Image (cartoon, rainbow, N blue to C red; front, side, top):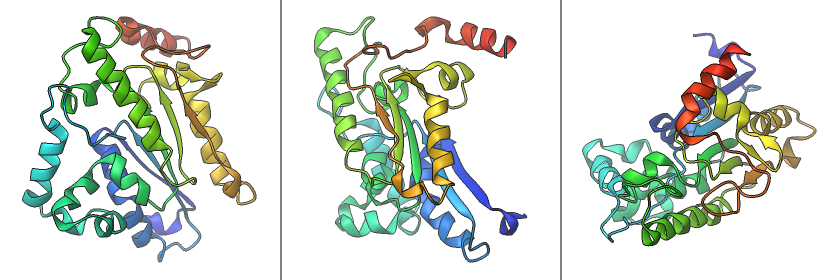
Length: 246
């Protein structure tokens, strides 16, 4: 209610909500624009720039199996991105429910937040049961690093209108954690500031075509250079401390 009077709309979510953003933001924009022709619609997808990869043991990833089944069971052919669907064969249309594939075809301006070592993707896609840099066997850690490098390569293929902030900090759903939002840093820019720069410039017509805010930690495993991650096991304590001091 009242959306017809909106001047700005941010369609966002984390985890499953981020996947929804990838899948449906163009549809939402197409439905809203006729009622409010001047509205500016932007998207924020946190944590589901997932890759179509097999597990460490060579078996299909859990996400692959779930989305392949779900595409049929949920009759999802009418709700996935139409451009992505047209680019895939009938038997591969389910791939349009995976971030790596669908993001290439999203036309509405989008900002992506992700970790190269996403803690949910590590289990659901890679079938890993260890923490990179802490207790992973060497072969599995190498596999995780290659997955992170593949994510960087996949990000380079998305439309230039989209921005992203992709760190080496193991996490999943970061925009709702104040400590991550305010503290995780790439090239001396925090996650929050990266998104706000992108958002403000996208809402400035004179600058919107010049926005290329794409920050990624190109190192492997831990934060490289001056980049900053939260302390792994004290995130919640630190988050409460930051909340108490504003």
